[in-house]
Length: 303
Image (cartoon, rainbow, N blue to C red; front, side):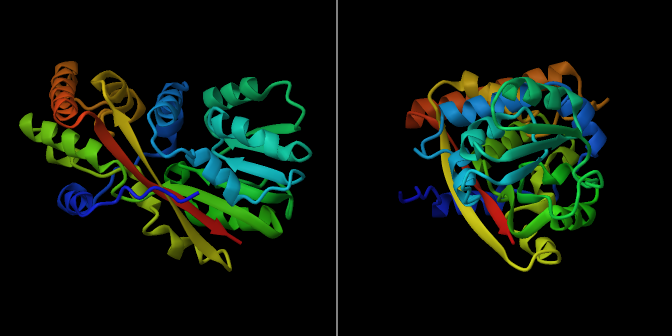
């Protein structure tokens, strides 16, 4: 199947103009205790990505195909979250094993409940992805880290740990975004921030800028002999502002502006921010038939 190509000169120009070089950074404790104290962020993102995508092949399907599974492998999922990806992957490992690791107890419990009773053996570990000391050398055929590596405190220790626990001939899949992914959402967000005369330090890019699809290869090549980048595109299309607003406000914390408490910003600020964003999204829907959010994403396959 030929992959859709949503990249246009207009989107490239927009990204050049509005995506900042500086990106948000959040400690792993913030992610554990705030973002993933429950599964709401993950639930909203997963629902929206499935319901509003236009690529007929999902990103999860793409990730599974990258792993080249035969059905008997032992797989380690770093930052397994609520088990959404593992639920789809599990039938491809009917005679293998799966280990899910996450440092957030709430989402790890959700994953455990989600996969409870399946025939594939599961092991659940509460730990940071840069501490794999409880795992033996050469114990996994496949390791994956999907959209979570930017929260890991010590990336070098994480990658060295993955190299140690991965068997010869194994595959480590690290999935992340390009810096300009979802540029349309950032466009309406930054315009609303400007209209509200928001603090300058809110104008930052996604935390995935810490290790993006543009920059990650150099870090990974210090630990793996072969690093291949496999890109993926999709476009979410909304004909009603409300599901997009849930995606924006709950799924992405207002493009990270509300990720941590800020004494400068009260609830009325966020109410006004949402009102301006929703108004612009509705205007674009009325003008174009839908509001698009383009995903430029992909995986590094490391061997």
